[in-house]
Amino acid sequence: MEPGAKSEAKQGEAGSGAGESGSGKVYHERQRLQFCLLHALNNLMQVQEKECFTRAELDGIAGNLVLNDPNKGQWTPLPFIFKPHHNVITGNYDVNVLITALEARNKKVVWHDRRKGASSVDLNAETLVGLVINVPIRRFRGLWTGRHWVAIRRIDGIWFNLDSDLSEPKQFKDQENVIGFLDSVLSQGGELMVVLQEIS
Image (cartoon, rainbow, N blue to C red; front, side, top):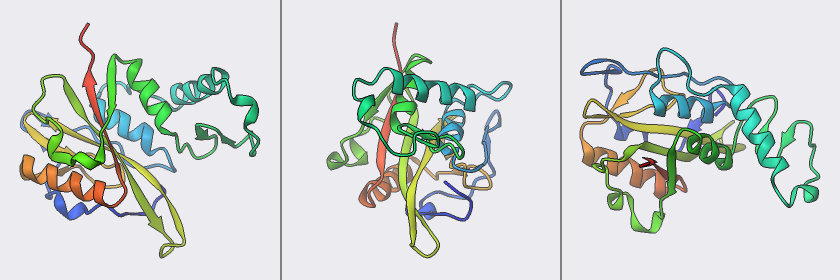
């Protein structure tokens, strides 16, 4: 999401935590251009010493998705900038890049059926890594609309909204608060993906 853009999800559903978990600082990348998917992935993975994902890696994934797509000959719009799975200049990667990137780290992405509501997600599952949401955004008083990727994760028993557009992670009061926030996202056209650890 670009700086200044407003997320339509209610940020008020999350509390104003200091961005620290019980055992140390919570990793939180801040927004730059439209690299919200890159930031969401790294915030989800919580890798502090070395970035888990890089722009070069996500660009490579997007390029491979094009090469392997049987319908690639049908794409015609400005191929040098607006590629099918991302914008070369600003980032703005799509869900296919998200899924492929996480599968490369032995993670499984399950698209949540919004008709079931957020309460149907098992937030206590042993294999749950975290959640990624894609929310509608607007700027210039609604004249420009787009989408924004956000990671939600439990760290040391505490749930955090790791939105890269926030100045710091927002701590949720409790699990019910997380469900309420997710239901708000879904009701406003957001999408919810559940990220699980693959069992080998």
